[in-house]
Image (cartoon, rainbow, N blue to C red; front, side):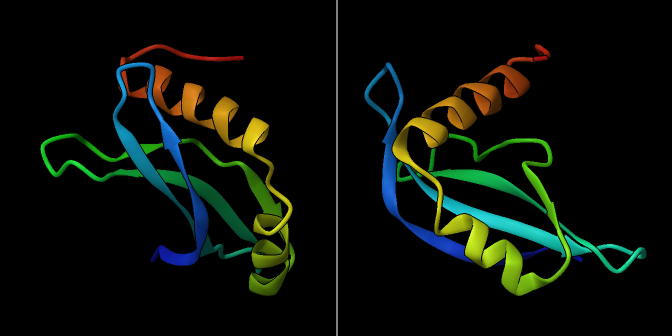
Length: 93
């Protein structure tokens, strides 16, 4: 079952001007590892939550939280673009 591991103290703004706050969400896998992805939650309830695919796999929950503390605005902008692409039905490399 997935859980919110970190709420990042930043927002991302879409080209249309919509603002999203960023959460790191993850789950404990049967292998014992943790995988995590980013969810971009819109401030406007009429918009959908955007989600990336797996962004990291770490040994422990604490490692995921530490990873989340290293994310830069540039990384988040790229992740947002990937999440938009996924929601539009596209794929990325």
